[in-house]
Length: 144
Image 1: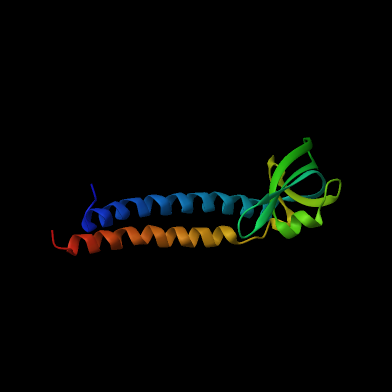
Image 2: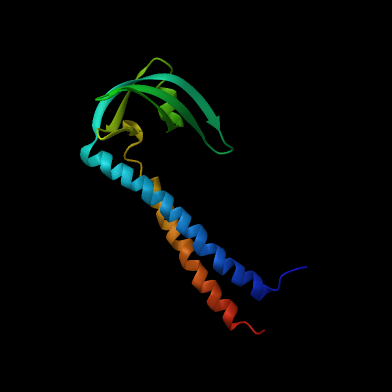
């Protein structure tokens, strides 16, 4: 059974804010970690223990396993890095890591720390969230 246009618009009006909220929540979480590291992060030199290329259709990234010294001892972290960062840091090479001294597992690669991609995701989430009420209004104005 095919849903009429009004029903599809109302369904999209419900789904859009939910998807928008998820995108906002994820990007807000990432932004808070970045902000905390920017203010109180400690920069150290870690060592790449594993480098694995992750390919996608348009772009690729790397999964880097990095061991870095922290106040509580050596920590091993998994980091997703852009292709150029992954290629520049093969196994056994040094790499800069910024970590939170109160939680050494909250860390980012120095080369990736100031990436603003999460801001774009947040803005896109806000846009998708705003589409919901607009679709509801359009559906409400359609004849039954």
